[in-house]
Image 1 (tube, rainbow, N blue to C red):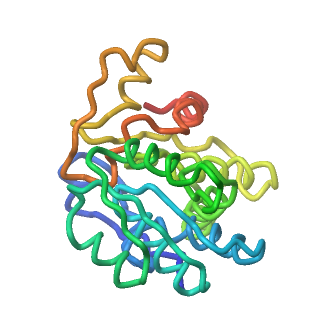
Image 2: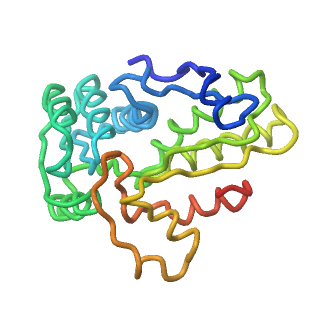
Length: 248
């Protein structure tokens, strides 16, 4: 549907305000369904089509559900989206307009995942949850390849990334390691800095206390609804990225 190769825009005023010599933004809203989720979902649904999968299901905080609904519509694959009831209406309407079956759940995305477990006891759906299948990550990593290509194969010093489920953070780092191994870039890789919402910041808690973080962590809904992922499946992988990159 035309995903990828989104623009990198210079942020002169914001850079000046905070003392950055060169600050820019990769604007993923230029993707189909207006988010970076299109990258991973495009890859996942392409492989689902190749493997003759008939019905996909996903828990979502909003953006991934809309992307799956769109790509399944394109691929003639049935789609079921399980979403928190408090999600803004525009995300619900997007799924329904693309013909998906929308199921609303009281709670956050982890509660949606539990609902899917109940619905899928007989394995009639293919679960496209974050990091539960191998292809979404391969689609997400294209962000890393593009950052390198669009900057003439010179990577930035630091990448600040809003992390929910973490596939983008993990995927970008995977891309950088691959590019480095192929010899397309030399020198240090960027420090990766993950940003989360105050109301739902499990990565921050786990970064500070990897062993006991769940005991003191109480997730809440947040205005940044796409970041409300209280117990991400890829937590250890995200922590590894932050450690390997010298990030925070």
